[in-house]
Image (cartoon, rainbow, N blue to C red):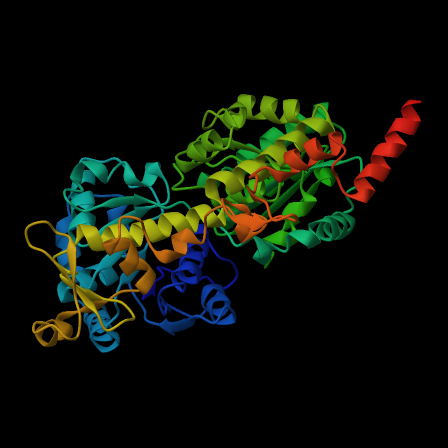
Length: 508
């Protein structure tokens, strides 16, 4: 069961996208249910993907990311509310194998799971503020979770000193490539640029945020854009996001309206599918003033092959460093440096295009789907090994059960024919077969063997076959090189001799 802290009506935040992607991936091994506080975009997307969603209102505890002296008292007060009892009753009824709660402020699902002895994973998407009570917040989170998943090192850093024996896992967001319709990007680019009136010779610089409020730095983007407009007549700017602070948003619009470059700006309030708008851009700028937990907008820009320039705020700095974008990692709040970086990136189309191509490749290498799935599988295996007291007896799809030895901690197989089987079976906690193999076998699951490099034919790797004339030889691993050598000696097939003859005639 995956608990989402929110379910917005008109847009999805990075935390919501990450939770939905996690549910997609966990379906490889588990049946998943997403619990949302209300109907909205997330629940609709989940149902479209065939994932069940249910509504369960759940209050949030914002003091966990801004810890104060009343933190412990507030925590205990929430555990005495009807909402907490409702979640406990839901978990008793559903009896999930794992509870996953999303964001640091979503405390009740983790507390309810902990009270029932159900394994709980707590995903931290944001950075806990540094206050005199930060360690208390970290202790509360750690003591109510069997594992803490951070989307970046930035999110895990405040928790590490107080984590104790609770394992911490780094699991950055990822994406399903086909879901973004990469083959349609050229068409989406032409369509959106035509809609906005962007000519072929224009460079489109974009700003995207799910919600627009001061900490997201829209005013920084606008002031940068106006300075760039003076030096780059071909520059155009698009702003996409849903205003949540309307006073701030109106003030930003006024800055543009009072400038001589208002006709170079376009505004999009909502776009259901990001693949319709990112392809139209050439450069993505992320001037966030917050210590971002991750910075999904920056990664999305790279996925779509765009140059990305961002403030080095929290997880954004990690993304930029991991993808070779240190030159575009700007000191947070330094508008002059941000402006110069954009001016440099727009001096020639080849500059931003090269950066975009590099970003597309590096995004897959560092954050791609295969990398994410491998990390997630290792995380699930590690959870079992770390909490053997909760997984004392485990069972996969087969009748056999496995018991953790008290001295060594290794798992011993107990088959149905053994005397102790009948008493152990009711205690067995079911886990997916693929995870079970990873727990009991150092070599990993059988599926891991399927991920070895594929050869052109199974017999080509170390096998023997009969040659004409009855002689045996071992197939060469690099057979194209051997074939070229045979052709040079005149031993190839007739067609090879024919091509060789043509080459000789040309030389003459």
